[in-house]
Length: 193
Image 1 (tube, rainbow, N blue to C red):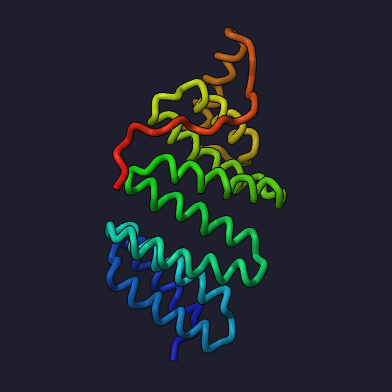
Image 2 (image 1 turned 90 degrees about the vertical axis):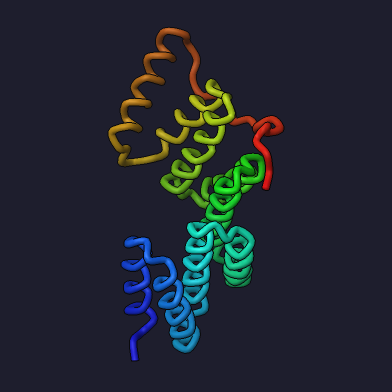
């Protein structure tokens, strides 16, 4: 019989190949194996993976339910980092539904937790998701500010991020200023599902 870790690796491989139904079956087996192995935190991670599959397949209510279950496990274990990761993933579910206001709120909650925990890398990556929302909502100056803060927190920027960071630096030299505190988005004009 396969271990939870072996099943998890199989599920990840299937997920990356976009074979979502097969991946879901394997993640359910991995969840059961981790529960049998006495590792509820890893079983909860498989629950998150099932939620990510539901999000990818457009089953948003199921995705939220799966992630809420995992979030409750991590909260019960007082694992704030993994709980914040789930909160960020929930933000991704709402973003997939074009509910940018709820997505931004959840990303903000996750970012605040990562900042409190001193996890600058996850903080920065969560800010990137927030900046994308601001940009898509036409709040370009707020987005630039959020990007700037994010880039200061991320160690290894990709090429696109490096270019944007350099453009922001040019903007700051020409126009002056830098990154003030983040602001909440105004009411979104995007239709909610």
